[in-house]
Length: 313
Image (cartoon, rainbow, N blue to C red; front, top):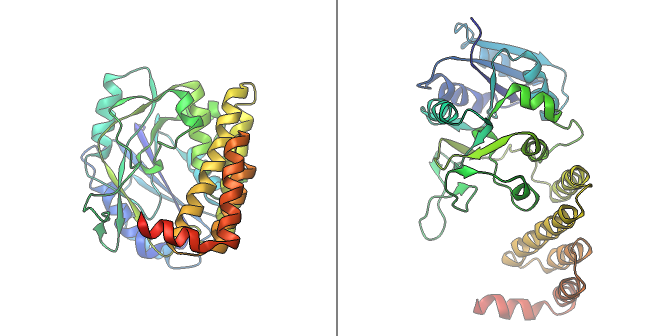
């Protein structure tokens, strides 16, 4: 008998984290699932870690030459036998009722093709909190349980990948993950899926996003390159609708503004100037472009102005 849900876990050199991830899947109160672990050419003891779990007939282990997370997830989709696909990265965790809650929701919304929700941020064995003591989650903004309009995908990033449960047929129709992307590859796919099906947001935290030193990239320039590439690809998806193309340009500009703000907090004004300049190039509207260029010049030649301003605020 075929499983209803296929859980796809791509992994690369995360043997130290994978055990806890798998345990969070096996603790699910909903049990009609299979687990497909795609080892993307790991060189650590991932295979040995997985062996201890293979006594459970629901778990399959597939090893492939290193090809990146998109290729690994796509390989998992090809291997999947379930009607529904759930994604879980090998460093993240699910709460025990994750699948049960989402499958019950989908039973109540039979026209839905995908559902997602918020996740807690998790680091060093505990949930992350901000300076006010509030638990951090992704996405941070609150949103009630609702259908996500596809226009929203052009402006905000509401989909947390380990929370996604999507029909396999919808994945094939949308075209799967883009192999050329190293990061943000998931959101490019969610944008495509939102064109073809009802994509719902269930406002209930059902997992943890883990932050650690082996996260995929901490290199700023690499992060910039792939973020822009992803958003440019998404702009192509909306090319028949010029309004959304402008929104994506704004999205890229907002990304660089956020990077500038991060470096302002660190008082690295050389990078502040760099990112405000990039934000100006990728922002629509002459007035805003002008403001960003001026802020770039201030950061470069008169950084004491930012120091005074930031100290007051």
